[in-house]
Image 1 (cartoon, rainbow, N blue to C red):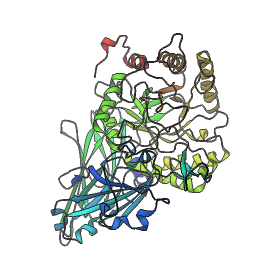
Image 2: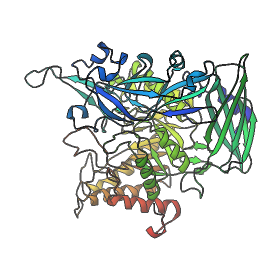
Image 3: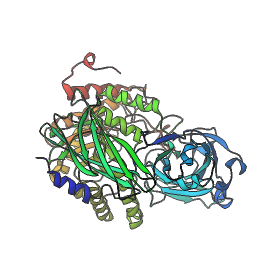
Image 4: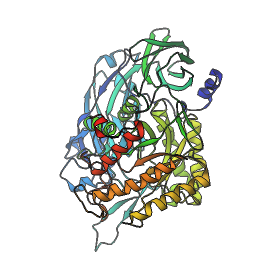
Length: 640
């Protein structure tokens, strides 16, 4: 039975989901009252290669055009800077890099002295960012993978000019207290290393790409504006319930009206007030891909704010896609809209040739076409939040998401202290604030493969998980573990057990015969100890495309296929009981740091880094389509 409206109102008001940080973070959109200007393209760029990496601050590069400080090069935004040039020192550079762009914006933005609000927004920059406009500090932000913004209205309107100079300094240094953590190791032996030599150590297995990775935009709103919207949906029979709260900034006196439209533009429901519930009869629910003939159905919530002041009338309009769906977890099942859902999907990375982690629309669409071809209904954002543009398509296509924060590589004891914990809590606030309204997001993941066997991990994860639940009581919370079932200190606090294992790879290497025994034991031990549903959140084997051997040996395509088939045999038995999902590691090969165990990156992908299939891709495709609808031949599957 769905909760009553009064319960939902109390949940919206008291949960803290909309007030975890100071202000909202609505995705910039053009509306009748808002205007947006993209700043993507070529920026001026300079790496600070001084010994202490501080010349840019000592000489105040932000106070004048960057080209006047020394040599600059062209750098695309969005993109990682590491693989753009032929400069080997830039590929593995650690420290401050500087971006600059001269921007011309519409003069009407500054001519209206009382109304228009101008905001500068960065989709993400890795890792610590400081932003100046015309040499004036406007904001700074710690952490990659999540957006941040600054109100630059007064700065721009104080000048009659309709142009400005934007300077962004970005530092990719990781410490034991960042997310992800890392450490700097200085090499003092002058007989082996040059003066001031240091390396960045990390505890995760992907390349630490850096730079401005997602779009930079300027956008406007009225000075009294819609600051945030929170939507929580529920289902009563064929009726969809859309519970909403609208936060307005700039005035305490305003009126709010909301209109929910279907995909044909027809009005499905209307409401008045900043807090309310809409009832949609014969609602189209949001269903995952392959669970419905019309997956990913979304309505559009049009929110209109109006207010009158002594001198002006203000109107602001914002539109938000809304999917009506519910999520629930039992001891043995994961339910979407009351029906059992089985995760058959992948883990991914934002990673590709040349652009690194930079947003690339061609690659994004290619990946979603491959996901649909594969029959994958889900993925985990391993091991950081993905771009909002990717998440939009998950909502649209019905791809279910386990939304993971950058808590990967939390291995050192000092990374479990109060300084790290406080930062982790803020990161979860930023993530929930950004993705709380997405129907595709069905679960939060607060970490990947932490040292959760440490005693310190118990309090740490109890606190992070409780805080995440307080931010969003509507979704389950997990983290992904590779610890033992009997000494994982955080497992009692998660809603779903997510386990990574690589039997016959990282141990018992080459021994395929142990997989089923060890995997069966692992599942049974975890379930008997914690009585919670289990997802195999990673499994797989490195495979060099074109390497073949029969009988199978490691790194051949035959070996990867045999690993998958042995795992699948156990999945098929345990999914009848309490296993609720399987996510292959990995969707595609990806870059890592250099090392003797990695030959130009991690090769566990079922696709190459260039998105060409290995033999295992066809094994998974056959399996996923059979699981979804009983398909028995490739001729019955759609082609993309």
